[in-house]
Length: 105
Image (cartoon, rainbow, N blue to C red; front, side):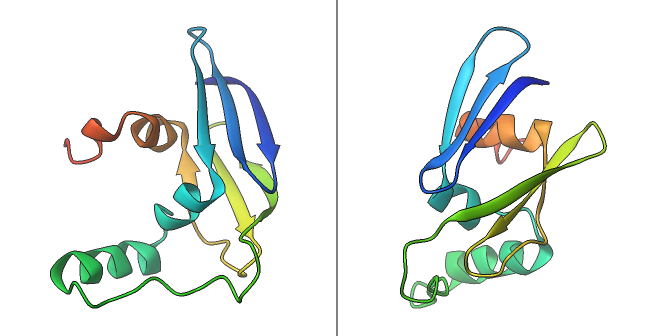
């Protein structure tokens, strides 16, 4: 579980975990790996179709406009491209930091 979260809107999310570790996740990675149903579907399509592309952020630099806690188990991030439906649980954020566990059950 995180002890401290610091959202740098133009750069990424810095996390200090309760075990003393620190992690940093860039905004672009957070958006690409959003746990929302629509983004999961798009990632599956991209895996099966090499010509599929992620939608652009509207021509400007992608930003994390805002973040809010969801209970005591997750974070919701609103991006400059309007996406805000992904709920990033603490476990999911940790798995993004340690990508080898993303495909684990």
